[in-house]
Image 1 (cartoon, protein in one colour):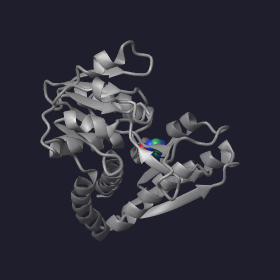
Image 2 (cartoon, protein in one colour):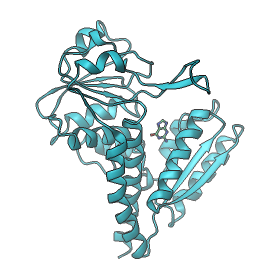
Image 3 (cartoon, rainbow, N blue to C red):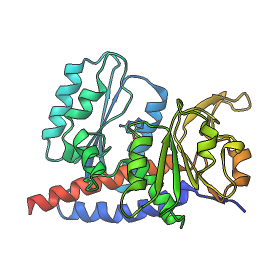
Image 4 (spheres, helix red, strand yellow):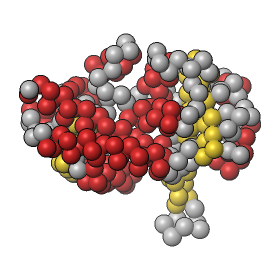
Length: 293
Ligand code: GUN
């Protein structure tokens, strides 16, 4: 029997824990607050941001929502970030990526006050993570670690293969899994790797974060592996009223029967990412309370 690791149930548990922490901070005079910047009309980004804001509301975290038109200038965006950086009532600042073409996302990432960088995208925070002294954990990789730990998946000493090398998932995932305490042996591979299937077949734990729908097929997975699907791809589906559906990077139907455990899409990693964003926001608020006392 394959274990399906549900992000829904785990995220609900974590949210319960975080709501208690949010209430405690509020009662201590620091109502936790997350600023969310969304530029342009990308439908996927609008859905992600709406889910982040809804989760804030459920947990008792104040969300301050800045939706800006696609023709926003770099200067306007930077002025907003500066204002949020300086506002003591804001603990987390998040700018949804990617930005519309013409805007420099890397400059924005570097501008966000590292103490409010709840995405853990700033080079300072990525550096601390790489050195083994993180101030924040990157949300998607941290959510995956929570799923593995709470799902009682053994990681130490095992071979984890990370498929994808993005700054948001693949690279920080490889850092977290190889860190002291997690102790996996990690291979990072990507679209340019030679004989990918031969590499992924060596995985005890396979993290699929390549951004291509149904990319990981049954022949790429070893019997008894743990497969984590980070993919969020919209593909055509004429049987749905919308004409599309969400598909992961893994061909779930054919891969799942081979696995010890697997995460579904939707209802898997995505929900955990948001839970970890909330956790980081509360950590930032907690630090601002500690500094005030
Ligand atoms: N775009 C895709 N994932 C993320 C994320 O976790 N944070 C931000 N800011 N943008 C994203």
